[in-house]
Image (cartoon, rainbow, N blue to C red; front, side):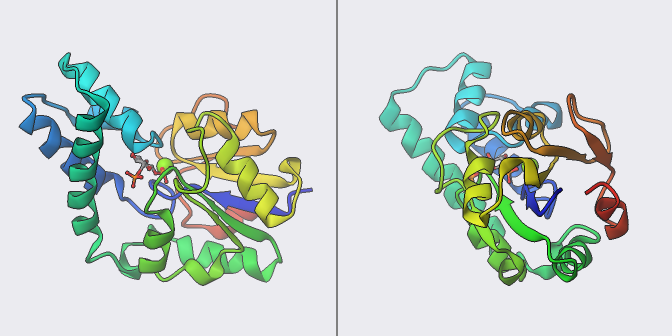
Length: 212
Ligand code: B16
Ligand code: MG
């Protein structure tokens, strides 16, 4: 019996991937590396430092740990500037209706995001109060596909992993949900490997309810 739904952030609740892309592209280009939309797909759900490592590897560039921290920090400063104007108008279609429908049916609601700005973003989006537990990049160690982010979420929500459904747009997130023993629901235009169910988006809350 599913009792809780844990949402990924970027790509499920809001399209922050476009801002991550603009900022990574700017940083990459300052290092003489060119990245495109296709490469950006691979960065979805990947932590900040792992994303930087992938970009440096693409360009065949080596940096010290200290230099890497500085580069990641620069990218994050640009990213936070992009988030300044974020508001409830940026919620993806049907998100608020879906959260309210789940609430009215007494499902618990969690956030399971790799982003260290996860909590800040859902506050800017005006949906923070609808969440019973929030786990973002500050609250766990091992990146998706490790299940730690979702297992921590289940623990905070007070439910067993098998009682959780996870909504994810990234292959690494689906793998994390499966590894955690949770129901893995892929969201987006393409099916994701290993997912239990698929939704193109959250525009019809009852389509999600029917899967739980
Ligand atoms: P930050 P999610 C992920 O969010 C993004 O998809 C990924 O592109 C980003 O690098 C990662 O968060 C870390 O974000 O730099 O803000 O800590 O999809 O797990 O909600
Ligand atoms: Mg995502």
